Length: 175
Image (cartoon, rainbow, N blue to C red; front, top):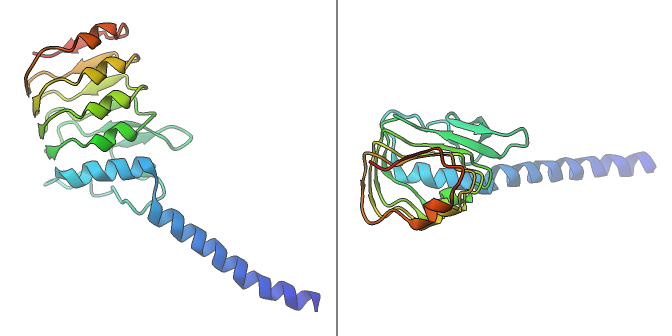
């Protein structure tokens, strides 16, 4: 009787594991969702974002994405990738991002205020695009920022005074 009961429990346990696996694969994670939102807002004629599969548990296997040993996104390298479209507010949901490299594309629209949430950011390279509007004052919250290159865009307005509080800044190019 004991062996029969055990045999009945195995299929239930197997189905529970399959269900858990399916839930993880379809729900993804917040960082994958944020990067998927970026992908969906961009035109990608060269298919550089082809590996960005939102159904995967983590974006750490995607090309142009680097992660820490604990599978947190630390780097997005999409410079000179012939991308066009707009940046998305969801980029501010990458809490351990250190490098956001989107230079030399054809990205338009404003710089999202939410990029000021990226408190681990060391380098923000958005130069050689067609970004417009003001430089968000929220970038002044990026206390680890060393490189801020926004040159060769169509930005307008004043340089935010909040940037003077970023004492780690080594390179600031707004030309």
